[in-house]
Image 1 (cartoon, rainbow, N blue to C red):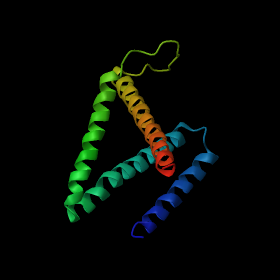
Image 2 (spheres, rainbow, N blue to C red):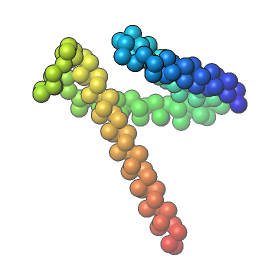
Image 3 (cartoon, rainbow, N blue to C red):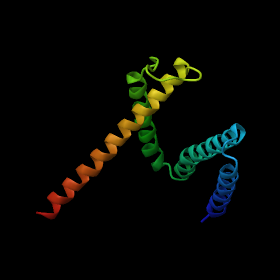
Image 4 (spheres, one colour):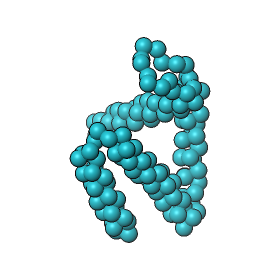
Length: 138
């Protein structure tokens, strides 16, 4: 309930940005504004995703152990993703400006991390379904 007005404000601003963008979507400046707003929302989401659990963890120290385990798992996923990622140039694509090796590396790392998390999510869903079927049939 505390964050209700913040959420409503962000939704209203997002709708206004979308409305302005839809009227003049051909302009490069408008596309830049739309991307900047997306980065702002991403930053707010990242801060909220990290900050809110930390506030609750310091209120309840038992939660700090659980949060540190989750952060450690996230670091392991990112390290594995970075280990398997590549900065090799993309062939067969005509770029106006060739991306830098660092950009290619970070993009590859993000994609591999998303694939790992997607596989874990599907595995968890399937395993949970199988366990529920076994428990119900007893």
